[in-house]
Image 1 (tube, rainbow, N blue to C red):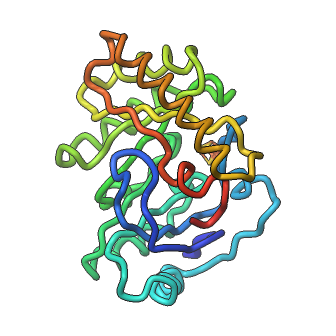
Image 2 (cartoon, rainbow, N blue to C red; image 1 turned 90 degrees about the vertical axis):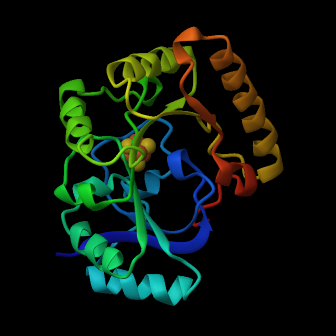
Length: 238
Ligand code: SF4
């Protein structure tokens, strides 16, 4: 079963969530069932770039061609990678080679291969995205993953404004046992000077940190910037 792939790159650092800072390769798949207003990878679903249908073996070959022997962790990203059944075979191949895997998905589609992923980030989207969370579906998603060992999955909500923070609290209270990450959103996807974007995003990060520190309902959370955006700005493929 083929996987629609838009880009394979790395090694680089994972810029987000529970594995932030991890040296990793990226496999970015095409297609998403959402269309978030601030999506920073809209090229995966808006038709502006074309995905290549690759077998799991071909993806592994490309990973080796690009990363050589300089990787032992692969992040499968999108779009929504959970739309693709064929990723199961890739995860098997990677696991057989002792390579660790990570995935991020909004939790709207389930695939059994998610149970074999080392680090699963579930990232339900807040109101500023204009998407609406189906909490019944998310309940099932979280429940299926909860059978795995602690620390193998987490929730992450991207924050742009106070409404998003209120939503994040709702999610945190609904799943109190899940490690919970708040990440400041990039609200300037058109800035092409990384230094300018960095200043702006650090300012936004400071706002989020200050706000969370004052909130007693958010005592057990981690607050992160998007590391790759601070280093490379809006550049694709890093
Ligand atoms: Fe973009 Fe992720 Fe939203 Fe899909 S779920 S539209 S990839 S931000």
